[in-house]
Image 1 (cartoon, rainbow, N blue to C red):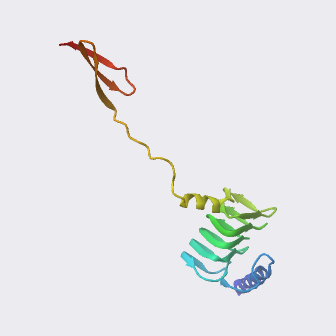
Image 2: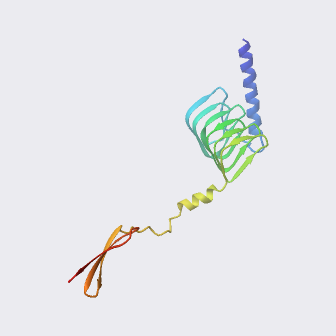
Image 3: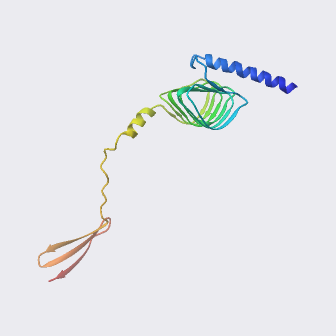
Length: 185
């Protein structure tokens, strides 16, 4: 009975956190999907609406045109692809934001951040690298290479060099001293 009361209090806290998340000025005013604190998902999460994660997710989260929020109670071991990504809980994985990534004061991130804009609030914990120039790099990768192809040169070449009455055969080996041999006619 005592555990049931604790679970109800935890559930009420999560609902309160969720409402605060959706009402945050950074987050969208419209509601989206919610993964509750008692839910665990292993695999790939995709969709066409905003997502708030208060539970556990392992795998990959792909919502490139939408907001993804990991709430204070959320624990994620996944790469996340989203338009705007906000981390208030724990994340182990890489973040790929189309517009921006925000690591809140309570957020703990162990992974790389790739987005045009990145915000780390005071008190946020972060270990990884930040790439804020990813769109320019993607454009460079898609352009054809204009560098000339490397030409392969044979390792050994032989030339006959006539000198006066005698012929000399010269054997060339790149990186080695030339050897000569002479014969008379």
